[in-house]
Length: 206
Image 1 (cartoon, helix red, strand yellow):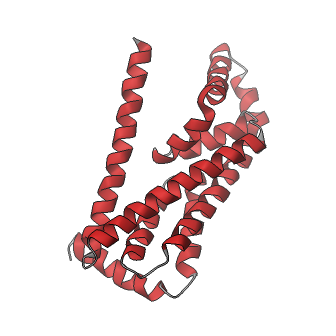
Image 2 (cartoon, rainbow, N blue to C red):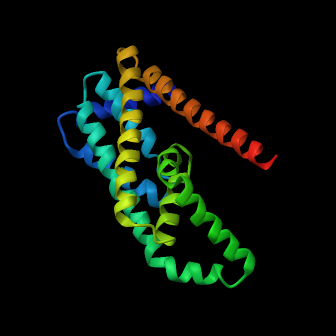
């Protein structure tokens, strides 16, 4: 069985959830866990939901809402974990001059570009977890953090859902092609962000 057949089978199974709230609960849960355990493929699942919505099997608004809610909760879980471990981690870093400089650099970066970083980090594998934890560790104001997370989660959930939805509308009769189209676009966007970061970093070091 090839990958196209497997994807089509997945969407065939997904149709059973079209009238059930279970799939939206799954999206919410996976999106929340992704912030604490970055190996969880939340973006892939949201794209799957978007493709199914594009084909008319799921509600796009509920896919977006579930992804947003999960991302919002997960980021705050990571933030509060960072706050709980803050004293222990900062004490360890402050033992050496090198560690102290690293900690100061992280705090400076968050103060300088923290809000925008919280948005862009969501499109970088593992970046979301590192940054939300760092915000907690460095004791960033909760109100400030929540405001930016609302923006970041809204942009991410809309982006991933619409990618899938557009793919589902474009390839209505072929779920596999719709998913591969949307997933390919998502990887391309991530690649462009990484390339832009690399170029900017290289320019700063010159």
